[in-house]
Length: 176
Image (cartoon, rainbow, N blue to C red; front, side, top):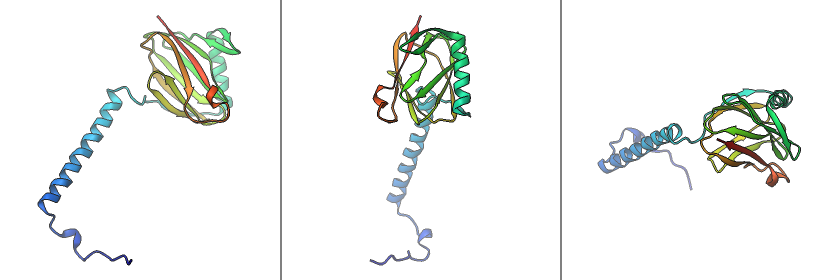
């Protein structure tokens, strides 16, 4: 089957009325979907906006250690338990195959989360909330977080990261 070039001047041919209607309908639907996508992001509290900075795993680990030392109140299964002050920075590390630290947060207080991976690509997913994003090593993902419910929440990796992926579960406790 040969590929034939279109007739000369095909672009300037008059379009039929029904074809124009379909093009208009498709354009209106596309614009409406684009507007809904932007509104869903802003009003629907989907896909949290975050800022990203370059860092190295060693540098991020040192900053996280200093932060945890400042707010550490205990230890759970070898993982530090950290209770940061409201309106402060919180550091979360994803590493094969665990999330550190265990966080105790206050309901209604704002926190600046710094999240990074020390080794592999991980997926940061706070359950049952709808917070999901990828964590690449070498980047400090900063997002503002305000817990609105009390309870125990799980932080899971939703990006396959190796044989221990299924056990990569972190914990966030939100108190009144």
